Structures are given as structure tokens and as C-alpha cells.
Image 1: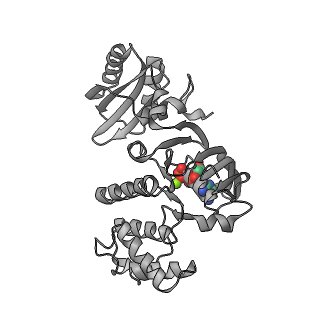
Image 2: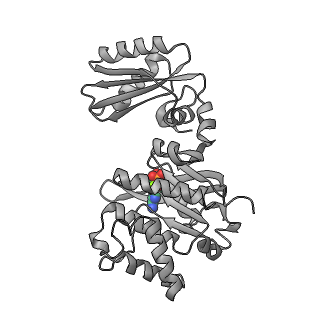
Image 3: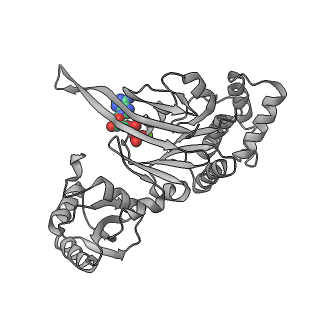
Length: 344
Ligand SMILES: Nc1ncnc2c1ncn2[C@@H]1O[C@H](COP(=O)(O)OP(=O)(O)O)[C@@H](O)[C@H]1O
Ligand SMILES: [Mg+2]
């Protein structure tokens, strides 16, 4: 058995109905996954990185047997999610970003006892295991084990979800945005825990995130997913090599942008003659991230300042940066002279 998880050509379409006028409803098909393939090895943290709507949750739900693909298949510890879903479920621990199913009037420990019994665990062995996982996720240390779930902070809820996923000691963990909305100390501990589980215990950890820094921090390998397709796969170092020859120019600016974000982005794109750039809202202003060809960065900086001040913006800061995963993302999702919205 070589890989822990293998996804092969996953396709998923959702049907939605949108109202058009008073009486008419129109069926729309959203193709959430357009053939997603990747492999996760034992002992590695593998990150599925992409923005909202890219298809991350759909992918992990299929691999967790919670959703059927329209075509393709996935193998978990060698078992097909289509052919052997029961065997798959025995070998995975799953944490979805929207947690449901915990009992508000029970303590963390009592909740785990309930879910352990559902798994067929009993007696002394179950109590020992509950104690162990409560310690592993730090709930004991936070004195949360015997607190009612309804009194839990978001960080404690996330830890309990992790504890539940680990209760039956599965060799594979699948987590959908496990640090979303957590306070920084909880987020850091969850990240450290995932790395420990993979590197020390040899588990396979599949984690989704839209946070580039998180992916860079904890993932041994990353797959960048965009509009239902895998745009690139590799170690962070390998991915960064994709942008060798390009230098990120980062310009922070302020002013009134309103709904002009994409207009500013397109203006910069056409007037600089560079397709690989992205304008986003950041605290206290906006940030344009432009992939300039190595050697041209000074000219790009000057022209960008010209263009933005000409449009009435104030420049706050200019920086020629080291390539980050964010640049890789811009690079692989905005190949060639294409327009941002075209999503090939
Ligand atoms: N139950 C659903 N019905 C219709 N469309 C959906 C449903 N779930 C997800 N989608 C759509 O599928 C695409 C991928 O969604 P999702 O897998 O949740 O992405 P992510 O987790 O990366 O944000 C999005 O366009 C989303 O709107
Ligand atoms: Mg999601």
C-alpha cells in the first residue's frame, strides 16, 4: 500500500435553482470539481490550498465518504470510497469546518464517551483513550474536559472536534480548515499538533486551508486548487521555483476604492502589460501584488506608483518581496495574458 490517500479524477456537479423574475426558476449546474487528482503519503501533512469556492470542502467530503463524486474515485488506505466506504470510515478521523453533532448539555468528556460508544469502544479502554486524546488536544490543560460544551470557546470546540476525530486512533486525518476563526494560540497549537501527528506518529494528514501562511508553515506538500482544478502540486520550495525569474512587487495604497477593486486590477494589468497581479483589501488600505519579470522591477515600481497616484490613490508602502505561496497562486492561476474572470 503506497499512498495513504489517492484521489483520481474527481468530478462533482451541483444543481442549483435560481429565481428569474416572478414565476421562472432556472436550473444552474455548478461544476465544483473538474477532475481533481492528488496523492497523500504516510507521515506527511498535505495541504489543499485555495480561495473560497475553489472546491476544497467538496473534495474532503468525497474522500470522507460523505458525498459521492459524479465520476472519478478516491482510495483511502487502499480502499475505494465508492466500493468500500465502511473500511474507509474505520481508517479516517474527520473534522469539518462546520461542526455539528456535539451535545450542548454534556461535558467534553461525556461527548467523547458518546461518540466512542458509537464506534463500538467500551469500558476501561474507552476511558483511557478519552483521557489520552483530551490531553493530546490540550483540553485537559485548559480545564475543559469536564466543562459543558455550551460553555466552550471556539478554540475549545475545535480541539474537541479534533479529539473526537482521533478517538479510534485512525491512521489518516482529514481536516477542513481546522484553524478557521480560532484565536492565535489555539490555531498555533492545532497546527503543531497536526505536524506532530504526521511526523512523529506517521499519520497521513490532509488539511484544507485558504491561508497561504498556514500552508507554508505546516504542509510538507501543497496542492493549489482553483475553480475545481489542481493548478500545481509540490513542496513549498518546489512551488516557489515555479515563480523563479519573477519578482513580487508589493504596493500598499489607500483611497476610495468602493467597488472598483477589479477595475483597478484590470487597469494595472493592461497598462503595465502584466497579467500576473492581484489587488486585495488589506487592513488600512489595499495591496497590489505584481509579478514583475526579474530585472524589470524598478520600472514596474515607478509605473505602478504613477498609475495609482494618477487614479487618486495615496501610496503607503512599496516593497520588492521574496516569492511567497501567494505569488505561486497568482502565477498558476493567471497564466498568460488571460483575464482574471475567465478561469480556464
Ligand atoms: N450544496 C451545494 N449546492 C450547490 N453548490 C454548491 C454546494 N456546495 C458547494 N457548492 C459550490 O461548489 C463550489 C465549490 O464549493 P466548496 O467545495 O465548498 O469550496 P471551498 O470549500 O473551497 O470554499 C462553489 O462554487 C460552491 O458555491
Ligand atoms: Mg470550504
